Image (cartoon, rainbow, N blue to C red; front, side, top):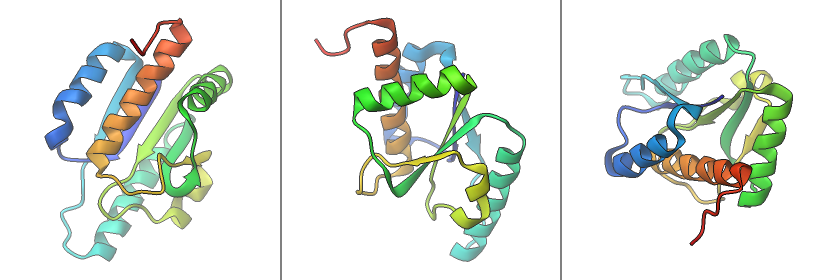
Length: 150
């Protein structure tokens, strides 16, 4: 099983593509929306959301992948191999996607198994969610031997 976790209220402009990939992947990916902080100070938001994420991660034995800037990047085939290898060893994977003010990595680093990045560029978290779904769909196609490109 694969789970995606993020602090998000809505997907806004990415709602339709995300729903399309959720439909294609059906019940193989679970999405967990953590409630974003309502605080006004960036420091308070960062602290509150990091604590909530830490509590969530402490409850699971799943393999945890944090999407984090300045981390390992992979091309699609390499990512597919990574996901399939992790699933063979751990079965379940959680991908954690950042939010507006990111995360205090020092407070959760002992709970993270791997850090990866899509790019050195910054993306809106809803776009990162959509991109992760799309890449996981490609992994599914590669695993099944289904052609993704036409």
